[in-house]
Image (cartoon, rainbow, N blue to C red; front, side, top):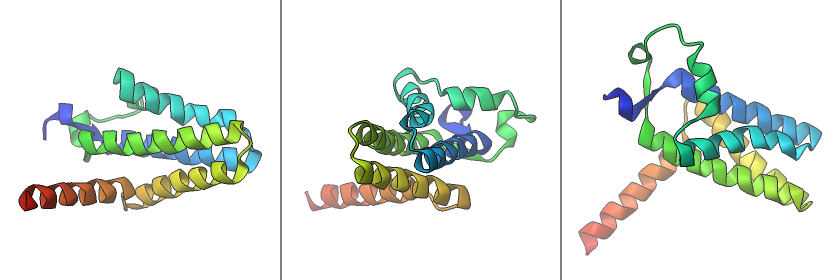
Length: 141
């Protein structure tokens, strides 16, 4: 795979851990500002193509990027859109004192990231199902 189309897995895992730790901290403390760490980092990645968490993590990689297992950049972008959406909803809900709604979105993103760390990518599954749905619609047209 072309390195411009992939991201080394350790960078993806670092981002997932930052989300898990930030959301977990928010859920334990109720301090919504902690959600801004992964939220602003994710927004930066989506709109500026610079992911601050991954930029910091890059400095700790000891091997050339190509020596690590690679993750598909397009798939990771889709996952980032899902994470940013949920984090945004959790953050805004928290600011509006909609505690249960905030916890719902927090749990959703926490579960998705935790499952991804364990090896099952919820975002990848959703992306795959959308691709199948699109393909069926094209074939039925």
